[in-house]
Amino acid sequence: MSLVETRNLVKYFSDVVALKGINLSLEEGKIIGLLGPNASGKTTLIKVLVGLLKEYQGEVFVDGQDLGVHTKEIVSYLPDGDHIFPRYTVNQCIDFYKTFFNDFNESKAVDLINMFSIPLNKQIKHLSKGTIEKVQLVLTLSREAKLYIFDEPIAGVDPATRDLIFDLILNHYNKGSSILISTHLIYDVEPILDDVIFIKEGNIVLHKDKVDVVAEYGSVEGAFKEMFKWSIK
Image (tube, rainbow, N blue to C red):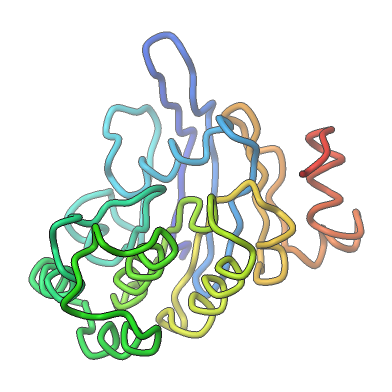
């Protein structure tokens, strides 16, 4: 059974078609890259999968079930941009997640926060952007989820922080679970992927095992350049 399955998923925003009949089947135990340029439909697809966009056509299943209470319980989602309360302290954020999510591992969160030497009693608004990124990632990874979804987790951070974020994801997500990671920074994400999905203008134009993509194009980045006909900066 697929962990995620969509059948002819269509999403409109007024008269604009953001997703054009998406058919996907995502396996368990995989790290999957959802890759495409800006405005290709990545975030729209993710918001459908996590239940934030409800007006769509087609069918969506997570863990074999329609989107609902169960799917929210097993999906840990890190959205693009800051989403935790700026007036909260780091410790209050941990308490909030512990109250809100039954699968939240408080001791894991505290251990990771301490590993980064982030003060538990400091308000989020007084932390640097890079530190806020780390806190949000720690909170997401401290859930014992079946599916982790990251929307542009490395956008706007420096290369050293990107490496740190990927290291944190690889070493601290719930093993046996799947990861869907959306980004347009192909070179940075390529080393950690098992499967590759290319999305362009609301269409899936490629969905393959990374090994097959590399065998055909030399690299995921090379495939991306070929299929999208642009240079990655």
